[in-house]
Structure formats: structure tokens, C-alpha cells
Length: 368
Image 1 (tube, rainbow, N blue to C red):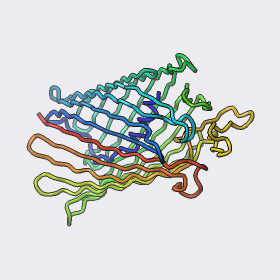
Image 2: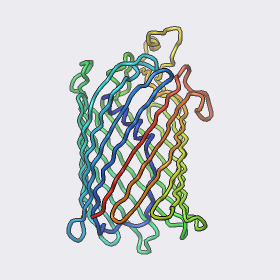
Image 3: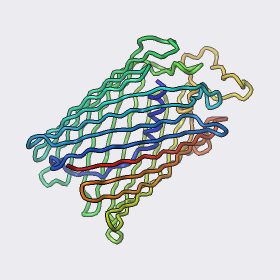
Image 4: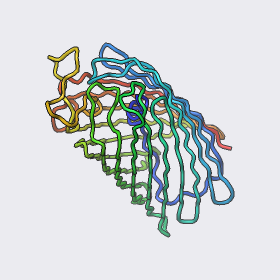
């Protein structure tokens, strides 16, 4: 459970924007084999918190004349200490998660269709998933529609046995439109909706009782612009998120990809993030230290989870890439930091300690 919660933050911090495509993809001519290694360390003033190392092996290969197969396996190892409430009391933890994803894709002239399955397991959390995706391009290949469906079924059995054999089911739906605007510009609009039902509380938090239904919706806007003078490409994105916990979040992302001689490229990135607190978030009262703040009398739902507080965050990063023959390598480094006073349009949650993380990822890929 700790690993799953932490990995959500890790992935949010490490996320990058892919190049957009305005048409249904053609079947790949070559297969690819990739090995990635990610190292993540977060901290708060005076203390290192959680470290995650995650090697991943992935394979994609064409099959026949109209199919491809993709598979990946990742092992997340987590060590360190997680906050028991807000960001003060730290609890030692150690866990490991193993996750496997499989998918097959069928290609035709104007469409693609993908079906996939996923499975991940750690000591107290097992997740099983099924996903479907499709793209449809217009005859002129300037417009593409994207549809997606994802179903997750999670089983939760925390080591402290606060609950046993709990479950969570989530259904995700997405609809997207990708449009060629000019010879230099691509734009994309994505709408998403998620309905979740089951156990959303954190059994390792002292005071944590959340609603058993969580719905959220997202709007994502992307714009890629090629700059002829430099040969580079700028990637801009805005994402709006809202959920039934009353969280409202905004994300602005800017990335620039600059090709360099001899197969090198350099990509600086900047991400700005801001969110409001969940309606049942309990603000930290310094007078209660060193103990957690008591929830309001008669409250049905309450949490002291930092990720559900009101705060702003900034991520600065750079990716260095090299391609030679059938090989390519990427080295990415990012620094993530969040503070309550960085929330846009209002103050953040009181007495929330600053939070920092550094992410380094190395990837090696070979075509065959």
C-alpha cells in the first residue's frame, strides 16, 4: 500500500509528454527492447523519507503483417520512512512491488485497436487491470480520434490488519482528438472520466477515513510546435483535474527538444502544479505536537495525508539523449519541490513542511 501511494507521486513527478501523432499508427517495422532504471529519493527538512529504485524491462515486436505485441515488467523496491500524519512523524517501511503489462495491437489503414492486461503485487496490495484503446483517422490523415477504457480491481490487506480483504474498483474512460494545424503544429484535446468505488483510505495513517466513492474528471490540452530556425520542437500542455473529494488541480508543462549533432538531443522541462485540499483534509495544529491533530468532532471523513492538502509544486528537469545505429540511450534528471505557499489563487494548507524529491532515470533501447 505504501509503495502504491508513493509510486503515484513518483510517476506524477517523472511524467513526460510524448510526441503527438495525428493519424493511426502504422505497424512498426522493427521491434524494440528497452531497459530502464529509475532512482527516486524524497525528503523533508532534516530527514530523508522514501527511496524507490525501479528497474524495468520492456519489449515491443511486430507479429505477422498487421499486429504487434508489447510487454513490460517492473520491480519497485521502496525503503525509508513514510509520514504517519502530515509530514512530521515518520514510520520505517520496506516493500517491493512487481508489475507486468501485456498488450496486443491490430493495425489497419485508418485504425488501430489495442487490448491489454496488467497485474501488480506487493505485500499488502494486489491490482489487476484490463484496458482497451482505439484510434480512427480521417482519409486525409490530418485528424485522429482516440478512445480508451481501463478497468482496475484492487485487493487490499494491510500488514497492521486494520482492515482485511478490502477491495477497490475503478473504471476509466477517455476521449481524445488530435489535429494537424499546420506543417509545424499539432494540437490535442483529451477528456477523461474515472469512477472508483471501494476502499480509498490509508490504513497506515492514524486518522484516515475517506469516502468509498471517488469520481474524477480531467481535461488535457497539448500543443507541439516545430521551430525551423533551430530544428527543435516545443511541447506545451495544460491539465485540469477535479474530483468528488473537492480537489481542484492545475498543471502547466513546458518542454523543448533540441536535436544536436551526431545523434544527440537535449530536452529541458518545467512543470508547475497547484491543487486545493480535499474537503475532509484536517489542517495540522502545532499545539497537538508531537501527536496527530484530532479530526473535528462528529466528522464522518478525515485525513491528514499530505497529498490531499492544498499546495503548489514545481518540477525542473533535463533529458540528454543519444542515438547510434540500432541503439539509443536517454538520461533524465528531475528535481521536484512542493510548498503550501506555492498554491495558485489562495493560501495552502497550514504548517505543511516543504517536500522535495529528485528523480534520475537511465534508459537503453535497441531496435531489432
